[in-house]
Image 1 (cartoon, protein in one colour):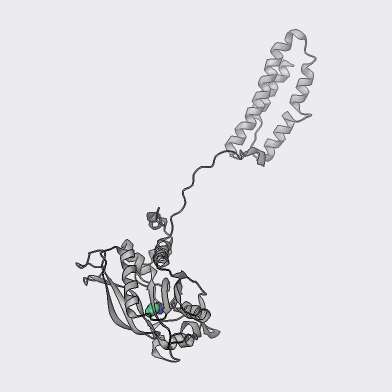
Image 2 (cartoon, rainbow, N blue to C red):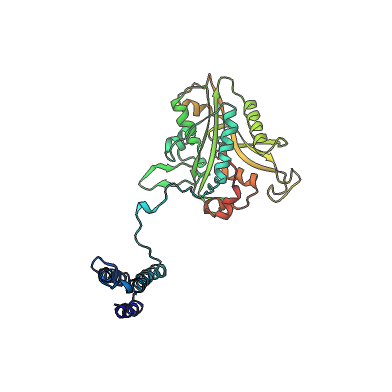
Amino acid sequence: MLDKLNSLFREVQDTSIKTKEELELFRIHYQGRKGILAGLFEEFKTVPHEQKRKTGKILNDLKMAIQSRIDAYTQESGSPEETSLSDFDLTRPVTYMEPGPRHPLSIVRNQIIGIFSRLGYTVAEDREIEDDWHNFTALNFPEEHPARDMQDTFFIEKNPDIALRTHTSSVQIRTMEKNQPPIRSIFPGRVFRNEVISARAHCIFHQVEGLSVDKDVSFRDLKQTLLYFAKEMFGDDTQIRLRPSYFPFTEPSGEMDVSCNICGGKGCNICKYTGWVEILGCGMVDPAVLENCNIDSEIYTGFAFGMGIERITMLKYQIKDLRLFFENDLRFLNQFKGAF
Ligand code: PHE
């Protein structure tokens, strides 16, 4: 038997195992129920008593040599035996995964919502694909009026009555159609314009529009609301100024600048050395718009304003290129860790 064991040692070392199939054949040949080892252990029973110690030791060594060839192949090929659910320790504590930071546009959007919520404004959202009535006509853009050229619109080719909304003012109309005053709401959302993408413009961007309609709402209320907003957003020292402007749906209309929070009004390249940066459009809701929504303009007045979230975020965090918001570059996004 000793001779047999010795030649088996050589055989075990010399067998080539290159594939999974060869490994399986090897395993069955030696370790199978009717395999070589089983036969040897059977034969071992007949070994004379005085040889049992020595033979037993060699037999055990052979058994281990067979196993170590199997282990070596498994390690080398990196293909462990199939695992089953019982191989997993489900009670093991998980490794901590840091949550991803919020997108800067979401952070600022939430801040804007927070500021106006504290003033009692509710939040409403609506569709991004709009009809002509809600995006233009009800907002007092006359048919074929050049005012429509103010906004380069993405129309649906098959139906020019449907477009991607160019501003969230469409939600003003939807809200007034459904509710009678008092109305005090803000409308955050994504808007679309056919713009060439650059550091300062994109064909997709985000706005928050605000609307307040009630008895005796005046321009003073608008101004005070916007001043409060500017101070909350950019700091207590912030000043505002209103310049006359034009929107078809407000009369009078204005644009609001805030004092440049980067140079403190001294002049820098962000404010183009004027000390002021424009952040929103606003005005008193045109009575014709109220009437389009069945609100009695003899009883009620209102103000509205609309701002771009990108612009405010760029100012707040001194971001110079708007395209960064859409590239999902983690080196950019990870700088907003911890902000909500
Ligand atoms: N809708 C205007 C725009 O997109 C902004 C605006 C909203 C102006 C409300 C006045 C009142 O530019």
